[in-house]
Amino acid sequence: MQLAEAQQKIERALLSFGLEASEAEAETRWILDHLGFSTLTQRVSPGQLLAPLQWEQAQALLARRQVHEPLQYILGNQPFCGLLLKVTPAVLIPRPETEELVHLALNTLPVIAEALRIADFGTGSGAIALALAQELQKRRQASQIWASDLSAAALALAAENAHLNHLNEAVIFLEGDGLAPFLALDLELDLLISNPPYVPLAQWQTLAPEVQLYEPQMALTPGEDPLRFYRLLAEQGPHLLRSGGQLWLELEASLASETQSLFLNEDWVQVRLLPDFAGQTRFLNALRV
Ligand SMILES: C[S@@+](CC[C@H](N)C(=O)[O-])C[C@H]1O[C@@H](n2cnc3c(N)ncnc32)[C@H](O)[C@@H]1O
Image (tube, rainbow, N blue to C red; front, side, top):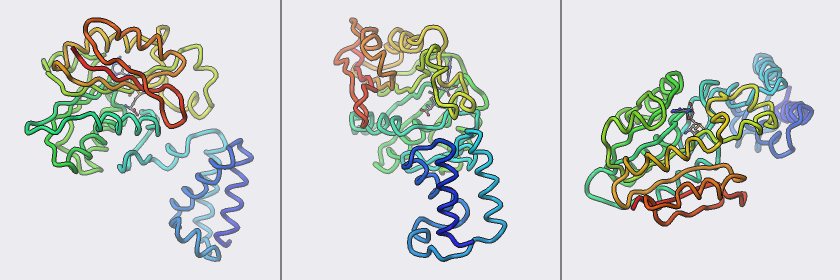
């Protein structure tokens, strides 16, 4: 079968599974790339032939996609801020909004002679901590980065991602509940950053099957109290940050002002909400007094 025909068949199949046209197009490109046909080849050599084994592989992939398994879990990876992260159902698939969070936080970090001290709470695949580590290395800014999670399986994968991206020594991974692993180290951080679980439990049922059936529920919803982790960060964050240290959080747009109100007290200044590229209020930034 020629590449152009395979492309059409895959795209049609994805559309029939309910994907939007732009998603079907992007996933088709990604699947063909996985089969060994670069985006350039797809564009300039539509007449190339697929080996029977390659088409069988595509069929197997589509069978999994049809039952809503996210393509990232099927292929086993997700690009994030220039890194390629391994992902499994043990971790949330890192989202584009979280790339924005990383860029926003980086823009507020000072350039200092000493190492910047950073903690990423709820690191999952290691996405935020590793992206920060890589960018600070590029800037030749020394850093000490700690990243925590309650899930041992997630932390094992995060450590593997550090290795796969040549960032072995750059992040110290810690297992534990809430901010306890950081508090135990008596840190004085320049940046505390997190994309904590924030989907209200009631909203869980309304999520796409890709999310509901395959992504770890513990990574997405904090349970009955949707603001649980923001309360924790508002109360315990001041014990972890130096005076003037930055707090950067991703949040649920529909709970933005409730989230912000948790930080409107004597511990924090310059508490502001920021939108993501889609225009949704998505981030909170505050400085420790
Ligand atoms: C929304 S995911 C974020 C993952 C990653 N930082 C990202 O942005 O892609 C939240 C993470 O918090 C972790 N988590 C959930 N409850 C926790 C708790 N009580 N203590 C520490 N981590 C927790 C989950 O295992 C999950 O990896």
